[in-house]
Length: 63
Image (cartoon, rainbow, N blue to C red):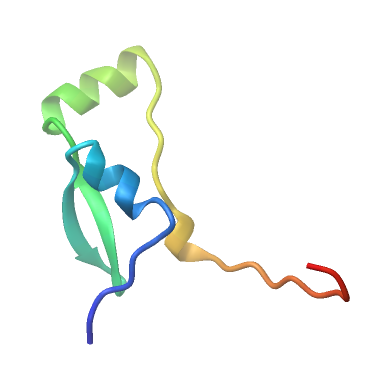
């Protein structure tokens, strides 16, 4: 079975992320390397894409 992509996959790829298979999705594991990213998170901020972990159910007459 082929992995699914999240809504952010194209952004991760355009930023040069190394993509891996995780829970049936293509997910970024790193960009510039673990050491550089560790320092960046310690000195600035880090963001983790968890969009593969949930779903939205929208109900109503008008979408």
